[in-house]
Length: 415
Image 1 (cartoon, rainbow, N blue to C red):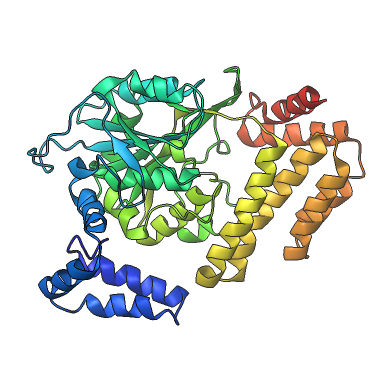
Image 2: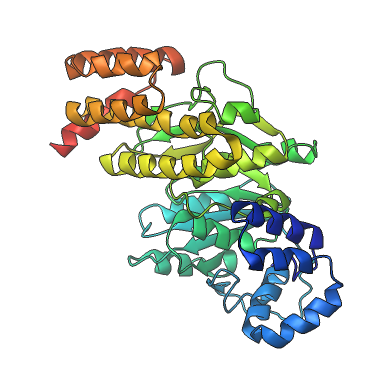
């Protein structure tokens, strides 16, 4: 797709990366060789052997107004309530920021998320792109009620990575701002974050802190980071087991669109941890800027389903990182998730599952003392462990932190 847009350098970079992943695939090396031939020549030959519809999809990535049919990822795209003007110059009236919101069956929260994006005090222009990932509830009707105020993409490939990539494919903004369908931005979010990128071209990504709430809107934590934490990560930090500045939540991130395109978007093989992979590869491109201020309300509650999802996703992430960064980085992608999921299981009173997860962590790094302590902790009463974890979290995040109370409440509701 980059080659068809005439970006030979980016095309060559992507073919080379693909060739390193699968060196025996001849088609990839043919593509690489094609990038050094005159573009007009290869263009003419390719149009004789490639279906016209495929070229239309490629053109729609360069000219978003052509994307009313199917984009290059197979997504049905339309701008609700606003007819497409094929004579409009796509290079005029571009927004500064493209807000990308994936949703599936989000009737309870999607309106809140969209409204928070539309209510931004940022004055330089924002387009809101909502990717409906196969909703069967009233989500499509809610999206339709916004008329021409938002762009809607109907993505047929399942999962948040594919949905976000579909949004990136048609985004026109200089910057991409991600927002989950059950989160919401505070009104001044973009007005405070965009200047960090505008004032220093070296930064490839900027992010901030968040408030966590449960499904009833009760505040669980006022910060995701330890008291006094103010630093953005190095690449080594992102690949470490216990750096305190994680996680970097998608709803907190604004990044340059050209950086996302160079990376190739979100890795669709790492569903559930695609954001972690994206930030690691973005950090290879340049430094991040961190604003230690909570500008997002994130809705989240612990469930066993999420624990299993994150473990599976961490295993996939470990597999992606190992060829590129080595065994230590691959281990660091999985160990914290297993230990966290083990603690959540223990708080629910499921000692057997907790022990299983801790032992899985030890098989990866047998010499990690903290994990052995957690294994022995499964022999202690769950309430005793809960008191210890509560004190630990409050020492790190402040006395108002209710993370452990939320986990215990989830245990009570599941009984």
